[in-house]
Image (cartoon, rainbow, N blue to C red; front, side, top):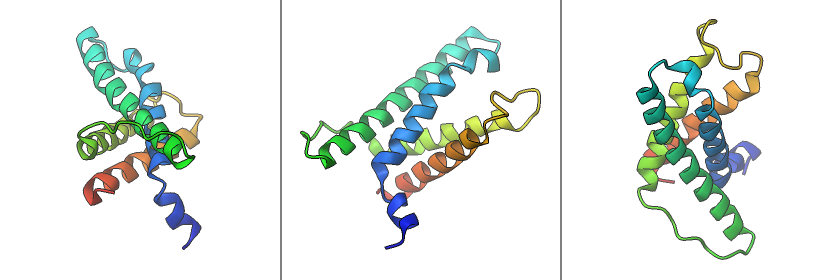
Length: 127
C-alpha cells in the first residue's frame, strides 16, 4: 500500500486536523462578521463540529493505542459532511486580499482544503 493511501485511511488524523482548524477559526469570526448574532451562531456551529471531530479523532487514536474504546458520537456521517463543508467554506477567507485572515500561512490554507475535502469524501463513502 502506498504512503498516500495509508495517510488517507487515517480517519482519526484527519478528524483531529479538521477539528483543530474548526476550533481555531472560531477566534476569527468576530473579524469576519459585523453582526453579533451571526458571530454567535457561526461560532456555536463551528465549535460543536470542531469539538466533536476532535473527540472522534482523539478517542479513535487512543483506542488504536490500546486504550479504552470511547462512546461514539451519533450522526458521524452528517458531522463529517457538514464539518468538511464548513471547513471548505472557511477557505473563502483566503481569497479576497481584504478579507484574508492569515495570508502568510499557506500551510493552513492547504490543511484546511485537504482536511475539509477528505471529511466530505469520508462522509460520502461512509468510511
